[in-house]
Image 1 (cartoon, rainbow, N blue to C red):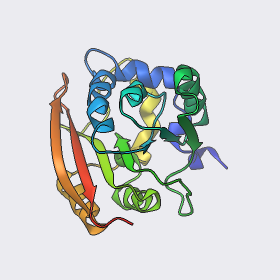
Image 2: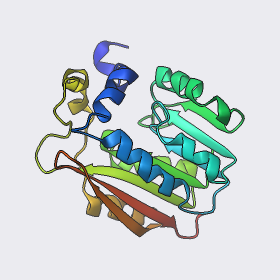
Image 3: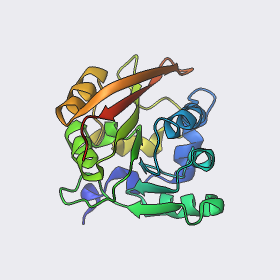
Image 4: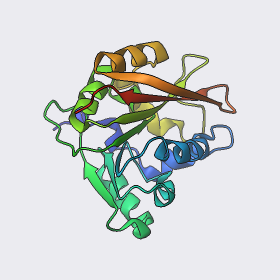
Length: 213
């Protein structure tokens, strides 16, 4: 595999990613953590899956959710290794899965609740819907970022580490995501919007499955 074929998320150090995300001018790590407490309590679920789990931000909320098994999925094996090290108290509950969601033959276990935060931007609607059908959850919770300008990565000292993301980034639209999810049997059930200090905003969209097997 040559350098152009490697997903840029496999090359971004977790420390740089998280340092950028928790800057006072960005605040996405802190805001997503707070929103994930709500996501894990979204519906009665024995199992949950977090797509793009990275270092495990928000996984501490699993302990009070009643969820007995949570799958953390990411393309970056180093992220998953650090995630497991950070949550020894979730031993026997947390299972990390290294997977490329853009692969046509991706195999994932079933989960009652599927969480995807700042992930759909990097795989696109069609790929995300295909993943949802593989996991077959009864409810889905997504956080997407909406931008007030053309820049999807906030300015920061770590900006250079994200240089390759333009190649895999997709602009997000609430309406298009809602339409795509409806086409596979998931209706929008609730919406939460949280402003960020840099003029961007995080929007949580929650979907309930219709007659999901």
